[in-house]
Length: 330
Ligand SMILES: O=C([C@@H]1CCCNC1)N1CCCCC1
Image 1 (cartoon, rainbow, N blue to C red):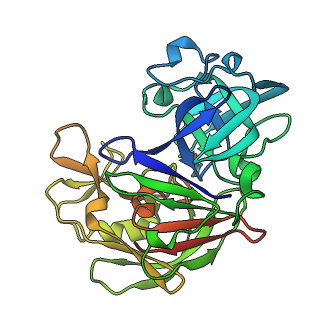
Image 2 (cartoon, rainbow, N blue to C red; image 1 turned 60 degrees about the vertical axis):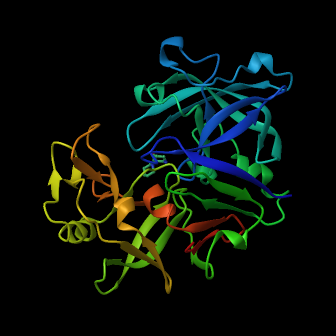
């Protein structure tokens, strides 16, 4: 089988991208954030503390004829931004893009932290990282990708994220109409569980490409591009008036600034991020100071090729016995 689901940015800053996911019988449709940087499928639910629900769609297991409680299983996930959620585990039928996992572990939230409560556009996450990142106890539960991979025509899913418009995630097929040129594949290190790869270097504007290994993760669930201090400093040195602001917690510049393109290498291929993608958003609504889409990864401890980078490319997440990432321009 193969399938495809549209994915839309939740706001004009492309803060996150959601997909409709059908859970249970009859179907309960929730808008989940497909996250290649984590491995829990968790949802807002009828069990979520009422004061922590604010406009989200919820999954009510008791209304599904196919739901089953997984006795004794609990989960608790903590993300890099310190956000958290936790709860218990059911299995139920889950369908994404026409592809069904008949007994998918659905991690039902009993509690979520404030940043989830305040985002009414996201009803939960569907993790597409490796099982080692799954938080369920006493044992990890398989991801949606784990559960469908054996039925897919090809053991892959692809990401075609776009700026301010709908893109798509495909499962089991590589649609060559969605990219230009050819795909360049790079090895993935699955330790500790991210889609971790080594970029071959970077270029800033029209300057010479710098061949250097940049290890990072392809993370659809992270908004921005986070790279080593030296690269980020060199980029903003070309933006007059840019500064690394303690007030705003990162690099800022005048919203009217012209930003150079940023190129990152994958093998001998090059992906160009338009400078405009690096004008992420005003620091506060209406401000003439803008926060950069390229930021320093020092405090994170790992480089992250988040949506700012991914939406400049077509990306194949190849879950074969030798996992790898394929990158193409589009
Ligand atoms: O928690 C995360 C991200 C948060 C946003 C959603 N994707 C997962 N991590 C990835 C980067 C290293 C630290 C852990």
